[in-house]
Length: 127
Image (tube, rainbow, N blue to C red):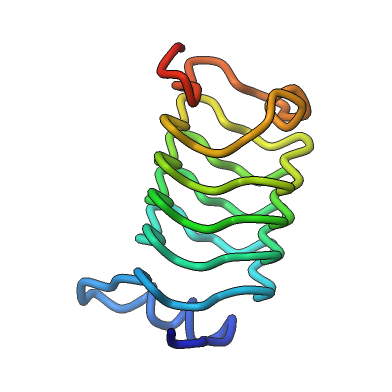
C-alpha cells in the first residue's frame, strides 16, 4: 500500500486528472478541516484518520476502512459509505443527511451520535 501526506492528498485532489485512492494507506492522516467534497476515496485505508470538521459532501467512501477515524462534525451529506468499515469511528455531530450506509459496519450508538441522519440509507437498507 502507498502512503501519502496531507499535502500530497490535497494536491492530488486539486488536479484535473482522474484520481483514485483505492488501496492507498492514509491511516492516521490529519485531514481535519479539509475541503474534500466529491473526493474519490473508495477503498482507501483511513484507519484512525482525523477527518474532524472536514467537508466530505458527496465523497465516494465505498468500501473505505474508517475504523477508529475521527469524524466529529464532519459533513458527509450525500456521501457514499456503502460497505465502509466505521467500527469505533467517532461520528459525534456528523452530518449524514442522505448518505448511503448500505452494508456499512456501524453501530446503532454511532448512528445516534450523529447530528443529522435524515434521508440516509441505513446499513439494513432502510431509510
